[in-house]
Amino acid sequence: MHDLTSWMSADFSPDKRLVFIGGEIDSSASERAVKALLWLESEGDDPIHVYLNSEGGDWYEGFAIYDAIRACKSTVTITATGYCMSMASIILQAGDERLLTPECTVMIHDATIQVAGKSEDAKRWADHHEAGRDRMYAIYHEAMRSKNKRLTLAKVRKTCATESIYTAKEAVRAGLADRMTRPAAGGRTQPEKAM
Image 1 (spheres, rainbow, N blue to C red):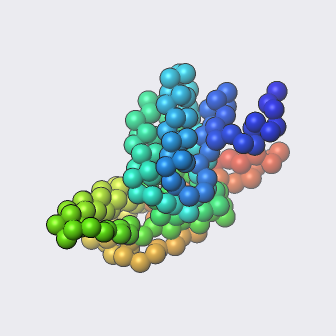
Image 2: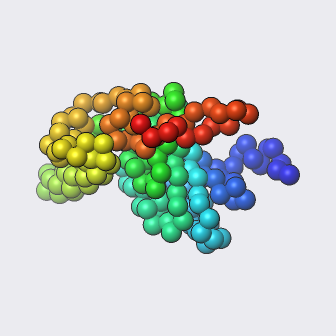
Image 3: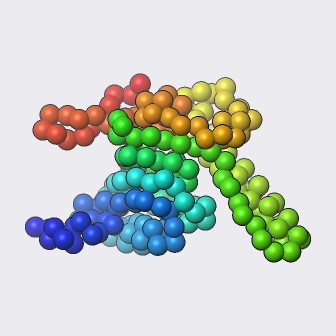
C-alpha cells in the first residue's frame, strides 16, 4: 500500500511505471523527468505512461525530456491533461501514443529567444536558435502529416507564427495527438476510438 504523502509529492510511481510532468518545464522538472525515465528503463521494458500538464518552458530542458522519451526502448504513452502548451506540445510528440483528456488545451507557436552580449555572439546564438526552430517545425510537421499528407513545412511555419490554440478534439484532427480519452464505466479514462 502506498504512503499517501509520498504518493502526492512524487513525480513518478515506479511500481506503476508512471511519470508526472507538471508546471513549468525548467531544469528541475527536466532533471526529475529524465531520472525517472532512466530508472524505469533500467528496471525493464514494460510500457511507461507519462502524464503531462504544462504551460511549457525552457527550450533546452524540454528537448532533454523529449530526447529521453524518444530514447526509451519501452513503449511510452503520453496523456496530456489540463494544458499542453509551447514546449510541452513538443514533448507530447515524443510519445509512441499521444492521448489528450477531453478538456485539454494544446498550443503551438514559435519559440522565443533573448540574447545578450557581443554582436558576433548574438548572431551565432540567433543562428543556433533558427536551427532549433527548424527542428521544432520538423517535429510538428511529421506529427501533423499523419492527418494531412499534403501539409507542407511552410504551412507549419505559418501556423507557428502566432499562438495556435486547439481544443483536444481540434488537436487530434490536426494530428498533434492520436486520440482523446473518455470516461468509461467505473470512472476510468479510456482512449476514444480513432476519429
